[in-house]
Image 1: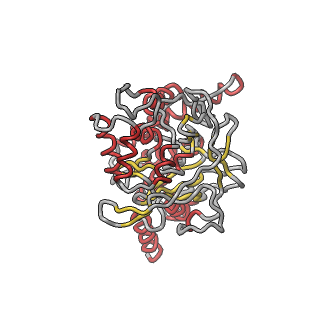
Image 2: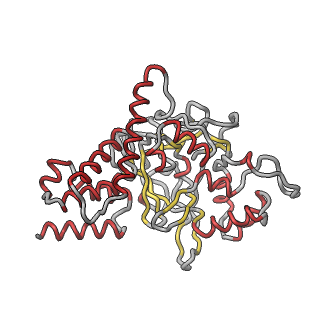
Image 3: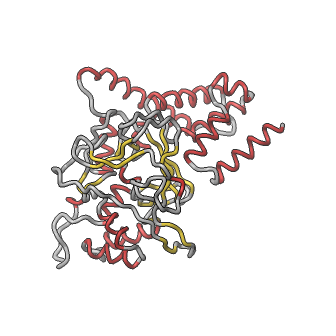
Length: 373
């Protein structure tokens, strides 16, 4: 979710409820150490979007960035590829500036009325040990819910001021590894699309962003805010995004003209079919897969590719491989017949989870044992 001084950015996927404001040309993301729940010191964030290979930074995972944050045709800031980026390329890795219990505590303070204004939220972040530059970067993120807060008489409160709870609701990502949300400064600069060209995964709190298709130089880089839109037609996902994130989606998957209405109808049919398959497969016994189960999951993979929904395809891919092997297919047939090569599966795991993630390590060990057999 991208912002200019917190005002909503209408980029690839969102329609702005407010008019434009002056652009902030300089966007810095700083490094800041802190103590987490286990008293271990970790970075609160990663690097600046403007880093070059010569930058003095202790995180080399993001050297020579393939994207930049710049003004789009709506007059706001968004993420764009600076060069051609091949499919399945890791483009950014980042740690959150707020996470887990920090976010949940801020939410509770807001809901209980303990925090009544932005000044209260800022004092809370100071108590967490977040430095001034990082706090300023957080306040520059968009709050899509700024017009939903009840007025109060707090002397430090001002009209239409942003709040931490709204910034989190507008920008935070949920890490399945940690079971909670994290706020990522740079990842928040990537707008939404129901047909994204980037996906993301987690290794603990570390968020990993990668391309799910070839991306042209100058093309906007968009993520998908929720997997729920995978299984919804245009009307359904429009209602969901409006309810969940308080914006109207105008991405290439939702906006259409008379020339491509038929394409949109076909897309809706694929999404509805994908939902049916997902609901059907959820009822199956994964330890006793049938030929029909394999056919359904292979169809799901094909539909996800047609709809540019390869964000979480590694999970579906893994299950398809497991079922095919259960049904007696060997590794050669997996690749030749279904395109389910172990090489591609490991590539997807490395992209979404990283080589040190337990799932990746376990998969590599399994591949080694299968080779020895």
